[in-house]
Image 1 (cartoon, rainbow, N blue to C red):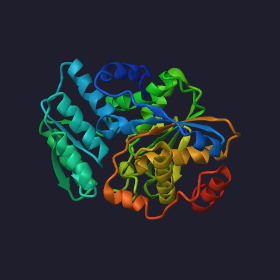
Image 2 (cartoon, rainbow, N blue to C red; image 1 turned 90 degrees about the vertical axis):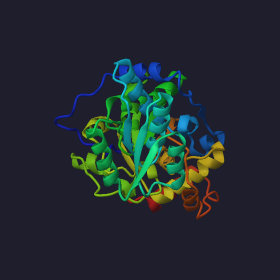
Image 3 (cartoon, rainbow, N blue to C red; image 1 turned 45 degrees about the vertical axis):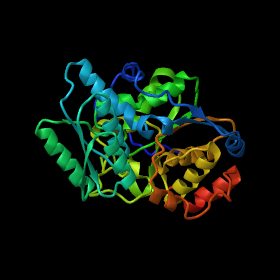
Image 4 (cartoon, rainbow, N blue to C red; image 1 turned 120 degrees about the vertical axis):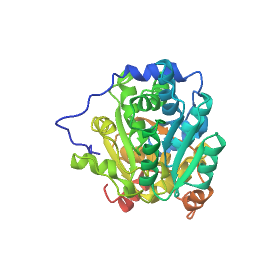
Length: 353
């Protein structure tokens, strides 16, 4: 598997990886140190060892709480804790911001496009935030920016250094807990988690490869890397991976993505396949966005000699009922992820290979 990225002539400056340790010290008293799981059966089938960092069990059910909380606590340390917070989101960031703001006693207003599931809307309200629904993602972003211009603090889902640093603590924890992967896989929407993951591995295991996973139907990041310039969707792309319905990566995250080994583009069938199999093997709910990372790991494993070590970051477990119905329209558990079967499966369904 060859990297999809191109070297850039000029890139924004990157943070010192130490910011991930600083973020961890800042947020660890408030958050769960999420577990690492594995499936012996899956390992036998694939011929590799796959370990899963389970952000499904994080506050608000996803890694997003890490970045939101770190950003607010960093402001508090600097004596600049805002009086109100505003954000826009495709779902999990909304819940993370709502939870973090409530933890610090700050009112939050979250703008969500109408495509966000009702359960994620309600969960955001349940954490105490005011939720405003807009027709499109573009309008959600514009409304949040107007609030910020009027004095609220805009807490973006990925385009902020402290958000990236907080999100990178998931990978740092796994490496501190003894993981020594040959390759690390994480989903990508706006690129904050993947950027933080790249920074985190620089601290403890710089030789590890870092790969992103993105829906083929929402492949703005992969297209950006191939073209050398940021590609932006006019509106939210259609994919079951709602965490990847972002319009574009930012120049900030793009700089980190160009240092990774590349982005693997995943089909909707693969999303469903791995969402089903991980739920079955790990006995917990896995979002389609998280399932992308396993799909990328499986593809990478097909290119490797047996016995490699992989770390897959399961970014969250917040799945709406309607999404679950789409995932299970076809029972894919009749086809186990044996190496021979996966090779045929990937060739058949992957338009990029």
